[in-house]
Image (cartoon, rainbow, N blue to C red):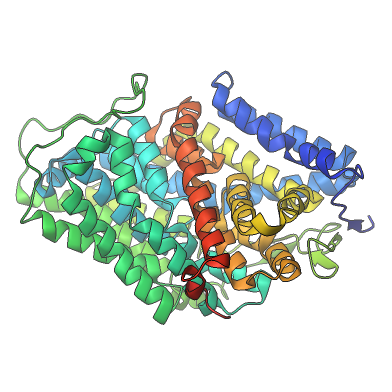
Length: 556
């Protein structure tokens, strides 16, 4: 099989080529939003359309397209699907032993107010898990926790996805910035500075936006002191670390500080009126028919409450350890084989103007199974299960039941990541990117939305940075705009697309066991994603052209 040279305008008509390139993603979103077809069938139909467009419109060899599709399925399960299976496994263990009901009661001891429980779990805990593991972990953990606390599936999933926004750019110990530095050649610390200065603007308001979307303006304003403590508790350390230290521990430290400061503040302050409703008040939440675990009828002892927190403490400790370079440097040399896909690896040539020079696309699978975050979560679940009193045979049976429960969400996620792999390899993403690059003076806005589109399509800020980082550099140089600004905006704008990427929605559905809820989640978060992504684009325009915002852009 010979090489395949990417073509970005296969019809010699930029508008027609862009429409055809966008068709599979538009089809996928339309099928999901309609609510008329199950998500796994929607993903498979959209994947079939993507492969057809790649072969028929872009001239990608059929054998090459099939191989890329298969590699995408594998990369879809590892690491994202692997994380979901094991988080749900742990959650189901705690429910079976009654620990989640005790956890629910103990959370009420911090605050019985549902608005503040959302902030503590989705924003503070979520930031920690995003920083330590990323790749769907915070949405899975937060959604499962909130569901266990009695929140409706739509509230638990939608708010968890909204909370997982401004933190994503520094997720998985800075993986998106590492990928962006590799694709642009820029210093990771310079990228950390611009992304920190942009994302901190939004981390200040995310707790307020979360609660507003849960219960409306009036109810949000009743708890503004606690929301301000949480937002400042995260934003101040995030800004300082991203600008003056490194891009790797931003979320872990800032999330822990936000959690500690919020919990301490709630020991001396509580809202005058406690809100106990667990359903959304500004969005139709009448069809959330999944029942959460039953609440306790008798107050647990202090020892029981401590035991209820033990599984999640074990998870936090092990995930934090698993994410460190120290651990990876020990285990990866022992087992981390790299599989080069024959007939495809470096046989796809990415071309100008999407890239500065012809660049072979690596198609490899690095099977770092031991150091995968999902493997760490599995180890945590097994240890927690043994601590809770499960035997080896019982743990195995529960794991098999978990695999059955999440079979359709896992199929959806793997199909989604396979779709993203084909759009990248065939150059459909390049076609869409170049369409954004033709916007001239308005490129800072549309270049930011390119990052938004990249994450919405691939489900990963890391992938979007690797995909469009080079294009941002080429275009910014052609237009005389700061390359540092546009590279950073690609990542910061991208995180706002995380809310509507189908893989994140499916993660939330799996965590809440709300099969068929994908369309309602998408409709709930869609406009928030568009508005926040556009707001990042406006900020990028100001930083590109308007003093004193221009002073916030590092020289690089």
